Length: 145
Image (cartoon, rainbow, N blue to C red; front, top):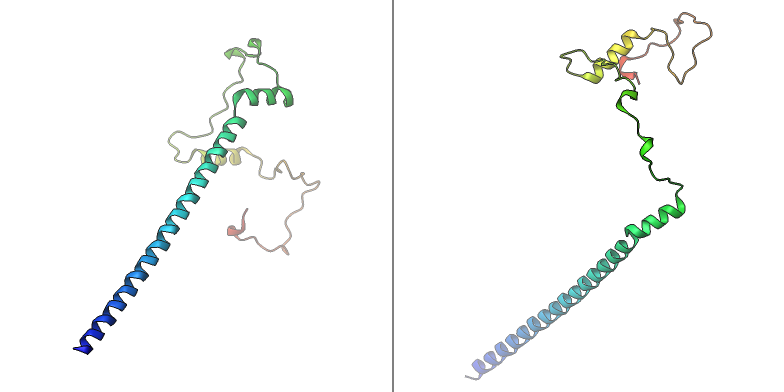
């Protein structure tokens, strides 16, 4: 019988220590949750403060004063508008009817009309045109830019 009593007392001590460990873990987790809730509350307060500051900085009257002080803007007058008859002509339509790619069609039309040896705006036209020398390496079609 004595062995049974010692076994039961050992089981009770083991169960008590296990319950104590569970209690300490739950207490630690509750403290962590409370700490996280406090951090969330602080972050929400910081966000609310930043929104209030943004609203103050974005106020229309403040922006109007800054614009008047720092920008040389003038009010729009009614006589600054023009009639429709003075608008420039509509640009020519380079696309062919039924063309699938209007931009490609415009480029093809412009290339067909342009002189074959014309220079672009950033490159000056050559003074004298000489035939291409055979020593120049041929350019790969994939190397075009």
